[in-house]
Picture 1 (cartoon, rainbow, N blue to C red):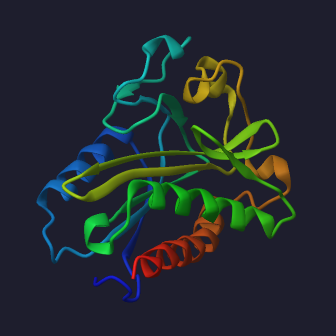
Picture 2 (cartoon, rainbow, N blue to C red):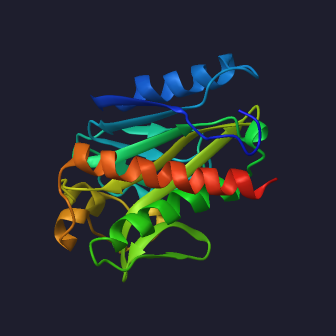
Length: 214
């Protein structure tokens, strides 16, 4: 993809998958790709798991119980993934597109903000705390890794899930941070529907950032 060309990555819908095999697959995809490898976006849900970023403090995992804890190579602290949460992994050649990490994070955040605004929900971001918030509650988390000029990991958007596991951690390293989801805000509560509606917004945001680099 040349800078300024149509942004049309392959979109894969993977269903509900355990975390670690997908994590390893992202790493392998990134390590194997070359200048001609098409970009991909993976859409999925995960079985219950807590993930800790590279420099995350394990003390933020308060009481994991029977939910596994996995150390990963993204930035950020601890978060939870589980059924009912839409996870979006953009596997993009950022160098080829002329995009920086900040461009990608901003595109992911703005995608959620634009999407929920259609349902009358006002969301925003916070300085030094990536993600999307509705009032004092976190709706979506963002964590990215860039290696060999390409991105993996990405965005998790709470749709309709059991939020109790978030009480077992300090979400994103913030003690007492409240978490919300689309179903509690009057937005669609079906993950496949949300995925279908969000992806066009994400492609638009990424194309806008890509074209801005010209």
